Image (cartoon, rainbow, N blue to C red; front, side, top):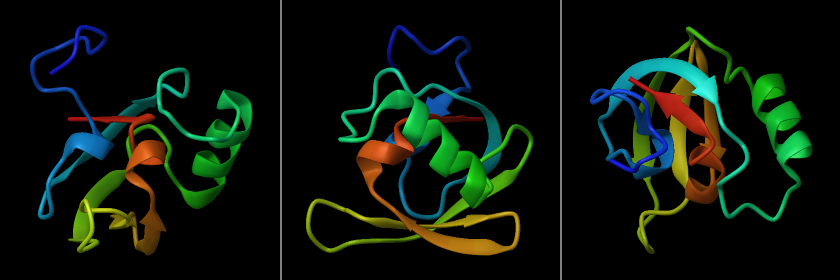
Length: 91
């Protein structure tokens, strides 16, 4: 857990392992390592369904450095880079 996370149960989705299941608390696009601007990353994530309260599950992770990950958000499966998943705070 990093210092920018608020409670002991909150983690960044990009740090979670395959099989993780939880709920989205918020987006924090300021510290991700993504090549996208924080505003563009937030917009893309929201368009894909990464919104507060949505259920999320990591279904699969890539063979090389566990990237990308296959994530189910609500009833949609999406491939996402771990660097971009770092913007999603879950519990």
